[in-house]
Image (cartoon, rainbow, N blue to C red; front, side, top):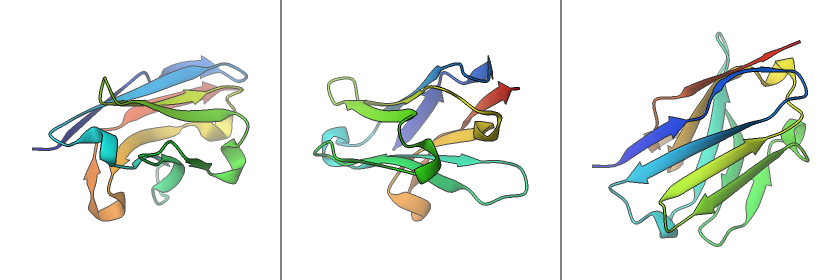
Length: 114
C-alpha cells in the first residue's frame, strides 16, 4: 500500500524559509517522478514542482528561483526547500505520486505572515 507522509509545514514570516519533507513507502521510490502541489481554500489544487526519476526539475513560474525540489532515494524522501516566502505562498502543500489520479499525502499547512 502506497503511503506518502508530509512534514515540515508551519508559520513563518515573509522572507523566511521552510523545508517540507515527504516520506514514501509501498513503492519503488527511485523510479517514480514526485510532485508537490498546493491548495488554498476555494481554489483548485495546483502543481508547484516536479522531480523526475532522473532528477530533472520543473517549477511553477511564481516559485522559480525561490523553491527547490530534491529527492533522496536512499531515504525514499522528496523535499521542497522554500526560501524568500511570500504571503501568497500560504496554502496546504501536498506530496503526490502519479498526478491527479495518483496518490496523495495528508497535506501540511504553510502559513506566511506579512
